[in-house]
Amino acid sequence: AMRAYRDGYTRQAVRIRIDAAFNIEDLYSKGTQGLLRATMPLAKSFTKKLWGGKNLRGIKASIVDNECSTLVYREADDAKMDAAVFYLLSRELVTAPKVQRFFEGMGDRLVILANTEQAVAGWRVENQGKDFLEDADIGLQVARLFKQQSYYYYQCPINNWQMTFFRVYPYPWEIYIEDLNYDLVKVGESEEKPDYDTIIAWMQEYEERNNILVSQKVGKFLKDIQTSDDAPSNPLML
Image 1 (cartoon, rainbow, N blue to C red):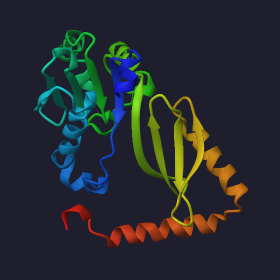
Image 2 (tube, rainbow, N blue to C red; image 1 turned 30 degrees about the vertical axis):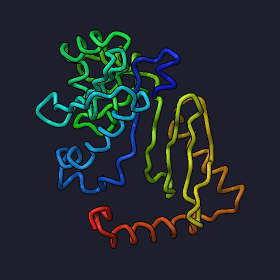
Image 3 (cartoon, rainbow, N blue to C red; image 1 turned 180 degrees about the horizontal axis):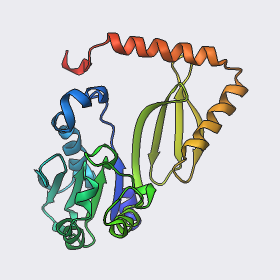
Protein backbone atom coordinates (compact mmCIF):
# COMPACT_ATOMS: atom_id res chain seq x y z
CA ALA A 1 0.00 0.00 0.00
CA MET A 2 2.74 2.46 0.89
CA ARG A 3 4.70 1.90 -2.30
CA ALA A 4 1.58 2.67 -4.30
CA TYR A 5 0.95 5.72 -2.12
CA ARG A 6 4.44 7.05 -2.81
CA ASP A 7 3.68 6.64 -6.52
CA GLY A 8 0.68 8.93 -6.14
CA TYR A 9 -2.16 6.49 -5.39
CA THR A 10 -3.79 8.09 -2.36
CA ARG A 11 -6.95 6.03 -2.87
CA GLN A 12 -6.58 2.25 -2.98
CA ALA A 13 -8.49 -1.00 -2.63
CA VAL A 14 -7.15 -4.15 -0.98
CA ARG A 15 -8.36 -7.60 -0.07
CA ILE A 16 -6.61 -8.91 3.02
CA ARG A 17 -6.50 -12.58 3.90
CA ILE A 18 -9.05 -13.50 6.57
CA ASP A 19 -9.55 -17.26 6.14
CA ALA A 20 -7.21 -18.08 9.05
CA ALA A 21 -9.54 -16.19 11.39
CA PHE A 22 -12.95 -17.00 9.92
CA ASN A 23 -14.26 -19.98 7.97
CA ILE A 24 -16.39 -18.48 5.23
CA GLU A 25 -18.65 -21.54 5.43
CA ASP A 26 -19.75 -20.23 8.84
CA LEU A 27 -21.11 -17.02 7.31
CA TYR A 28 -24.66 -18.40 7.08
CA SER A 29 -24.80 -19.37 10.75
CA LYS A 30 -22.74 -16.53 12.26
CA GLY A 31 -23.61 -13.78 9.80
CA THR A 32 -21.54 -10.77 8.84
CA GLN A 33 -21.43 -9.67 12.49
CA GLY A 34 -19.58 -12.89 13.26
CA LEU A 35 -17.28 -12.24 10.33
CA LEU A 36 -16.56 -8.73 11.60
CA ARG A 37 -15.85 -9.84 15.18
CA ALA A 38 -13.49 -12.60 14.08
CA THR A 39 -11.54 -10.56 11.54
CA MET A 40 -11.43 -7.06 13.02
CA PRO A 41 -8.02 -7.76 14.64
CA LEU A 42 -6.65 -8.41 11.14
CA ALA A 43 -8.06 -5.13 9.84
CA LYS A 44 -6.56 -3.26 12.80
CA SER A 45 -3.19 -4.96 12.35
CA PHE A 46 -3.16 -4.04 8.65
CA THR A 47 -3.94 -0.42 9.52
CA LYS A 48 -1.26 -0.24 12.22
CA LYS A 49 1.40 -1.39 9.77
CA LEU A 50 0.72 1.41 7.29
CA TRP A 51 3.63 3.83 7.04
CA GLY A 52 5.75 1.00 8.40
CA GLY A 53 4.17 1.55 11.80
CA LYS A 54 6.04 4.84 12.18
CA ASN A 55 4.74 7.81 14.22
CA LEU A 56 1.68 5.84 15.28
CA ARG A 57 -0.35 7.52 18.00
CA GLY A 58 -3.27 5.12 18.00
CA ILE A 59 -5.92 3.15 16.14
CA LYS A 60 -9.62 3.93 16.37
CA ALA A 61 -12.37 1.68 14.98
CA SER A 62 -16.02 2.59 14.62
CA ILE A 63 -18.96 1.05 12.78
CA VAL A 64 -20.35 3.59 10.33
CA ASP A 65 -23.69 1.91 9.65
CA ASN A 66 -26.04 -0.42 11.51
CA GLU A 67 -24.37 -3.54 10.13
CA CYS A 68 -20.66 -4.14 9.55
CA SER A 69 -19.13 -1.30 7.54
CA THR A 70 -16.28 -0.15 9.77
CA LEU A 71 -13.82 2.72 9.69
CA VAL A 72 -10.40 1.89 11.12
CA TYR A 73 -8.46 5.13 11.50
CA ARG A 74 -4.71 5.40 11.98
CA GLU A 75 -3.86 8.52 13.94
CA ALA A 76 -0.23 9.60 13.69
CA ASP A 77 1.89 12.18 15.46
CA ASP A 78 2.21 13.86 12.07
CA ALA A 79 -1.28 14.38 10.60
CA LYS A 80 0.11 13.82 7.11
CA MET A 81 0.70 10.19 8.11
CA ASP A 82 -2.90 9.60 9.20
CA ALA A 83 -4.70 6.93 7.18
CA ALA A 84 -8.23 5.56 6.93
CA VAL A 85 -9.21 1.98 6.16
CA PHE A 86 -12.87 1.29 5.45
CA TYR A 87 -13.39 -2.40 6.15
CA LEU A 88 -16.38 -4.28 4.66
CA LEU A 89 -17.81 -1.04 3.28
CA SER A 90 -21.18 -1.75 1.62
CA ARG A 91 -22.07 -0.25 -1.73
CA GLU A 92 -25.03 1.70 -0.29
CA LEU A 93 -22.71 3.43 2.15
CA VAL A 94 -19.76 4.17 -0.12
CA THR A 95 -21.99 6.41 -2.25
CA ALA A 96 -23.54 8.17 0.77
CA PRO A 97 -22.84 11.92 1.03
CA LYS A 98 -21.14 11.61 4.45
CA VAL A 99 -18.64 9.08 3.11
CA GLN A 100 -18.03 11.11 -0.03
CA ARG A 101 -17.33 14.16 2.15
CA PHE A 102 -14.92 12.08 4.23
CA PHE A 103 -12.99 11.05 1.12
CA GLU A 104 -12.68 14.71 0.12
CA GLY A 105 -11.71 15.80 3.62
CA MET A 106 -8.79 13.35 3.73
CA GLY A 107 -7.06 15.30 0.98
CA ASP A 108 -3.76 13.65 0.06
CA ARG A 109 -3.81 11.31 3.05
CA LEU A 110 -4.17 7.58 2.40
CA VAL A 111 -7.66 6.06 2.19
CA ILE A 112 -8.12 2.33 1.60
CA LEU A 113 -11.23 0.25 0.93
CA ALA A 114 -10.67 -3.26 2.30
CA ASN A 115 -12.61 -6.42 1.44
CA THR A 116 -15.60 -4.72 -0.16
CA GLU A 117 -16.37 -8.07 -1.82
CA GLN A 118 -17.36 -9.48 1.58
CA ALA A 119 -19.50 -6.56 2.76
CA VAL A 120 -23.21 -7.04 3.46
CA ALA A 121 -23.86 -5.46 0.07
CA GLY A 122 -20.66 -6.56 -1.61
CA TRP A 123 -19.13 -4.92 -4.66
CA ARG A 124 -15.90 -4.91 -6.68
CA VAL A 125 -13.96 -1.94 -7.96
CA GLU A 126 -13.12 -3.75 -11.22
CA ASN A 127 -16.84 -3.97 -12.07
CA GLN A 128 -16.80 -0.23 -12.80
CA GLY A 129 -19.99 0.60 -10.94
CA LYS A 130 -22.08 -2.22 -12.42
CA ASP A 131 -22.77 -3.54 -8.90
CA PHE A 132 -24.70 -0.36 -8.04
CA LEU A 133 -28.40 -0.50 -8.86
CA GLU A 134 -28.87 2.98 -7.42
CA ASP A 135 -26.38 5.84 -7.59
CA ALA A 136 -24.64 4.06 -10.45
CA ASP A 137 -22.87 7.25 -11.55
CA ILE A 138 -21.39 7.79 -8.10
CA GLY A 139 -20.55 4.09 -7.90
CA LEU A 140 -18.58 4.41 -11.13
CA GLN A 141 -16.74 7.45 -9.78
CA VAL A 142 -15.80 5.55 -6.61
CA ALA A 143 -14.66 2.52 -8.61
CA ARG A 144 -12.42 4.70 -10.74
CA LEU A 145 -11.10 6.57 -7.71
CA PHE A 146 -10.12 3.34 -5.94
CA LYS A 147 -9.14 1.37 -9.03
CA GLN A 148 -5.61 0.69 -7.77
CA GLN A 149 -5.83 -2.68 -6.01
CA SER A 150 -2.48 -2.51 -4.27
CA TYR A 151 -2.80 -5.79 -2.35
CA TYR A 152 -5.03 -8.77 -2.99
CA TYR A 153 -5.08 -12.25 -1.48
CA TYR A 154 -8.02 -14.58 -1.94
CA GLN A 155 -8.48 -18.32 -2.16
CA CYS A 156 -11.45 -20.13 -3.69
CA PRO A 157 -12.21 -23.30 -5.66
CA ILE A 158 -12.46 -22.87 -9.43
CA ASN A 159 -12.72 -25.64 -12.01
CA ASN A 160 -12.04 -28.27 -9.31
CA TRP A 161 -8.77 -26.61 -8.28
CA GLN A 162 -8.08 -24.74 -5.06
CA MET A 163 -7.03 -21.40 -6.52
CA THR A 164 -5.25 -18.37 -5.09
CA PHE A 165 -5.43 -14.79 -6.38
CA PHE A 166 -2.35 -12.82 -5.38
CA ARG A 167 -1.15 -9.34 -6.19
CA VAL A 168 1.17 -6.79 -4.56
CA TYR A 169 1.74 -3.42 -6.19
CA PRO A 170 3.54 -2.81 -8.54
CA TYR A 171 3.83 -6.44 -9.59
CA PRO A 172 1.44 -8.37 -11.88
CA TRP A 173 -1.57 -10.36 -10.76
CA GLU A 174 -0.66 -14.00 -10.19
CA ILE A 175 -2.90 -17.05 -10.18
CA TYR A 176 -1.81 -20.17 -8.31
CA ILE A 177 -3.39 -23.58 -7.91
CA GLU A 178 -2.71 -26.31 -5.40
CA ASP A 179 -1.47 -29.21 -7.53
CA LEU A 180 -2.00 -32.93 -7.00
CA ASN A 181 0.98 -32.97 -4.62
CA TYR A 182 -0.38 -30.04 -2.58
CA ASP A 183 2.28 -27.65 -3.87
CA LEU A 184 1.43 -24.16 -5.08
CA VAL A 185 1.96 -23.78 -8.81
CA LYS A 186 1.61 -20.53 -10.73
CA VAL A 187 -0.52 -21.04 -13.83
CA GLY A 188 -0.59 -17.47 -15.09
CA GLU A 189 -0.01 -13.78 -14.50
CA SER A 190 -1.25 -10.53 -16.03
CA GLU A 191 -1.00 -6.78 -15.55
CA GLU A 192 -4.78 -6.51 -15.03
CA LYS A 193 -6.90 -8.69 -12.76
CA PRO A 194 -7.67 -11.79 -14.86
CA ASP A 195 -11.29 -12.68 -15.52
CA TYR A 196 -12.87 -16.10 -15.15
CA ASP A 197 -12.39 -17.16 -18.77
CA THR A 198 -8.70 -16.24 -18.70
CA ILE A 199 -8.15 -18.25 -15.51
CA ILE A 200 -9.94 -21.28 -16.95
CA ALA A 201 -7.76 -21.09 -20.05
CA TRP A 202 -4.59 -21.00 -17.92
CA MET A 203 -5.80 -24.02 -15.96
CA GLN A 204 -6.57 -25.97 -19.12
CA GLU A 205 -3.11 -25.19 -20.50
CA TYR A 206 -1.56 -26.43 -17.25
CA GLU A 207 -3.62 -29.62 -17.31
CA GLU A 208 -2.70 -30.38 -20.91
CA ARG A 209 0.98 -29.61 -20.36
CA ASN A 210 1.13 -31.94 -17.34
CA ASN A 211 -1.25 -34.64 -18.60
CA ILE A 212 -3.67 -34.10 -15.72
CA LEU A 213 -6.80 -36.23 -16.00
CA VAL A 214 -10.16 -34.83 -14.98
CA SER A 215 -10.59 -37.81 -12.65
CA GLN A 216 -7.35 -36.91 -10.87
CA LYS A 217 -8.20 -33.30 -10.07
CA VAL A 218 -11.82 -34.13 -9.19
CA GLY A 219 -10.66 -36.93 -6.93
CA LYS A 220 -8.31 -34.61 -5.06
CA PHE A 221 -10.97 -31.91 -4.83
CA LEU A 222 -13.54 -34.30 -3.33
CA LYS A 223 -10.95 -35.64 -0.90
CA ASP A 224 -10.13 -32.11 0.21
CA ILE A 225 -13.82 -31.36 0.78
CA GLN A 226 -14.16 -34.46 2.94
CA THR A 227 -11.06 -33.48 4.93
CA SER A 228 -12.45 -29.98 5.40
CA ASP A 229 -15.78 -31.34 6.64
CA ASP A 230 -14.01 -33.49 9.20
CA ALA A 231 -11.81 -30.67 10.49
CA PRO A 232 -12.74 -28.12 13.21
CA SER A 233 -14.43 -25.01 11.79
CA ASN A 234 -11.62 -22.85 13.15
CA PRO A 235 -8.40 -24.65 14.06
CA LEU A 236 -7.06 -21.47 15.68
CA MET A 237 -9.60 -21.91 18.45
CA LEU A 238 -8.08 -25.22 19.59
